[in-house]
Length: 134
Image (cartoon, rainbow, N blue to C red):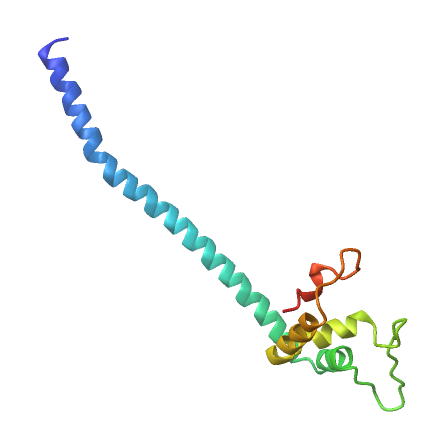
C-alpha cells in the first residue's frame, strides 16, 4: 500500500464519519415526518367521520329513530314491548345498557356488595368477566 492510497483511505473514512451524523439525523427526521403525516391523515379521517355523524344528528328522522332505540320511546298509539329473561328481568342487552350508564358510586357499591357475599366456589358459574364493567 502506498502513501497516497493510505491517505485516500483516511480521507474517505473521515468523510464517511463526517457525513454519518447528518445522514442519521436526516433519516430520523424523515421517519418523524412520515409518522406525523400518518397522524394528520388519521385525524382528518376522524374529523370526516365526526362531520358525517353531525349531519346524521341534524336529520329529525335519525334523532327520532335513536330516541326510539336508546330511550325506548314509542309513538302515540303504539305499544312498547320489553323482552324478559327466564328470571323475569329485562333481557341482557337492556341490563348491559343500564350498567353502562351507572355512576362510579353505583359500580363501587355493587362491587362492595359482591365482595361481601364471599369468594365464589371453584365449581360455580361466576367468572372473572362478571366484574369487567368496572
